[in-house]
Image (tube, rainbow, N blue to C red; front, side):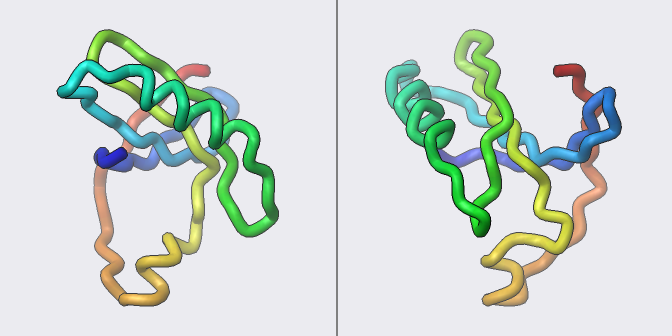
Length: 90
């Protein structure tokens, strides 16, 4: 699922990555399947899914934050700084 990713800070000051997905096709079942699959995956080299939220056609996935950047940024050097932050309450 494609979507924009934002850096967020929860009320307990934990920094997270928030993936915002707009479900244009209305197929919420694929989102639910992906959330179910991701919630069962635990590995020291993968970020954990901390939570999700669905509101109409907008979906949010909340992940652990990779403070040193993504694997793609390290492999391909396409690191770009974003000034987008969001505050959230979980």
